[in-house]
Length: 282
Picture: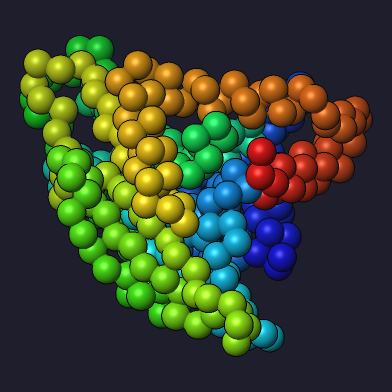
């Protein structure tokens, strides 16, 4: 709850309200964990760039010690520019209509990263990175170094890895370590994710390229795999982000509180509504 309060404050600090869109723009990502934004869809959620993912209903510990079980994040991907390139400007944006965006501009190319918990394919966390070459830029390879903040081994879940039977896809599964009562069982979790390479390259002839990384989490191997496969089909058809965005826009159109003349209060309302809405399952 305290984290949500601080992240609402993060949203409010420099937000701009236009109609029912609320956007918070930062030139530097907040250092304090409590102030970093959260993305979620009511089933799966994470603090952006953090090493933990949480799933609805997945708890570990007995009675008063019960807490949300930590799933190591496979979606905390960061990109780093080549050593001979420097960032002209960059921004970190939480757009409460659906997505967190990091944008970096250089003299030769721009990089846009979008991170979101898919509203329709609700088991998915999505992370896509696009490189677009600037007009007139030299036609040379552009290589980004990628890192993934998976963090330490989870103390809440006994994970094992297995063959996903899908090229370029990882798979692990396990159960929570401690049941919530003496008579209840431990809880299963299954995760499929796109393996993150050390780097990605926009080749010399290309003007743009997008790489998409997905994490699918469920208490069932079949369901987790199914959602991952549906995500892959949506990537191929070019509809993965648009189906997510459209549902969020529909959600805002169904109910919101618009306020004129008091921008600070309007920011507080939109920020609070975003965190409530992103916590509710469909």
